[in-house]
Amino acid sequence: MNLNRYGAQHNLRAVNFICHAPQAQTVSLVGDFNQWKQSANPMQQMPDKAWMIRVDLKHGHHRYAFLVDGQHLALDPQAMGITRNDQNERVSLVAVS
Image 1 (cartoon, one colour):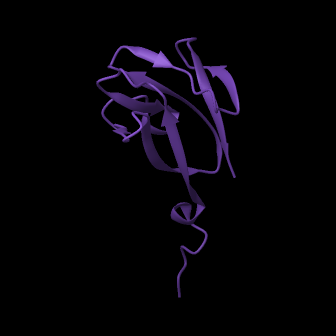
Image 2 (cartoon, rainbow, N blue to C red):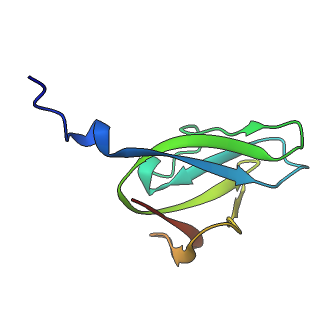
């Protein structure tokens, strides 16, 4: 009998994030789901020079941004909206259901 059938691991959904920063040396996905840690979700550069990562996120709204070359927070033009983080910086918003 699986008591965890409806546990947190079953409420995750894979979300693809794509950042168009062809000149960047590094891009990381930072957000409230990884405590805004630069090292938590490094993105991989694809052959077309876009950066991509797939992350499993819980149901709800998540604030995030792309950290380009460890210095610049970039918004996601494909985001559902724009909000602010705890430092009052403009960041992107995604809803996961």
